Image 1: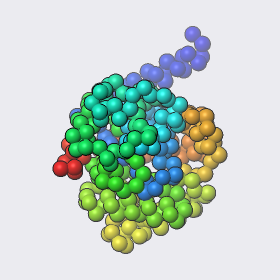
Image 2 (image 1 turned 90 degrees about the vertical axis):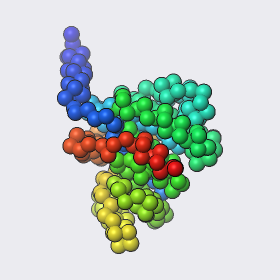
Image 3 (image 1 turned 120 degrees about the vertical axis):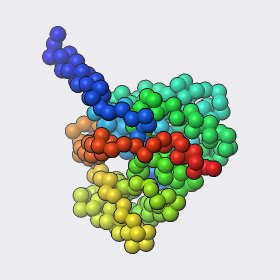
Amino acid sequence: MNTSQAEGEFVDQATKLRRLMRPRHPFARTIAIVSGKGGVGKSNIAVNLSVCLAEKGIRVTLVDLDMGLANADVLMNLQPRYTLAHLLAGVRTLEEICAAGPGGIRFVPGSSGTHGLANVSEFERQNLITQLRKLDDSTDIIVFDCGAGISRNVVSFAQAADRTIVVTTPEPPALTDAYAMVKAVRQSHDRASLSLFVNMANTRAEAEATFHRVSGVARRFLNYSVADGGYMLHDTTVELAVRERRPFVIGYPGSNASACIAAMASAMARTCNGSKPRGSFFRRVAGLFV
């Protein structure tokens, strides 16, 4: 056996050991990745965060909830045969549309060119929630890559999640829409746990200033303290990885962007290991649509 084989087996055994030692709960923890507007890198954050969490031995399922402009599959160079559209139509089950993603994650693909989740019937929406509920038995963390904007569906998933991460950039329009997202979620649900992640910052100082700008407004007008979810500096390797259709944490593990996401994943893993989920996410989200 060569050295690389031995190291590979050691890593695999260590991953299995962490999974066996980790306390099991009847419900998966849920993370909703949202943004007030498109183009801020939300899906890229969701994909790379999922991969980083899976590298820690956590069973992760990434669900692309964008039914109109889904692109998480493109970022991972996947060509799923079936999507959430087939699930909503009742022609495929959750097991049939799930795909194996990079880094050991499981992926539930969204769809492009459809009317979007906002336009589905109540029956289809409840069927979606019923199907996704099966993930509780086979997943430790479910990451929801939600569509951009503050539609009822996006806000409802953000309210029901154990943790919601609002992604923004330092540009004024993105900041305005990020605050709108925080406001929509907080005004509808007092128990929502919100944090702000600043993407594409030029410097750490700019990222911190961006966070304090949004959190300050939220504290003043909503009487709510938004948590600091971290930041990611502008990095050309992110653009390269997008063109190559692979997560940058895999293609460029030594990049600044990868270090930022790895730090975010480590903090999140510690939080998840030290706390229990709020109960059934799917029961909560179903109640919000009543």
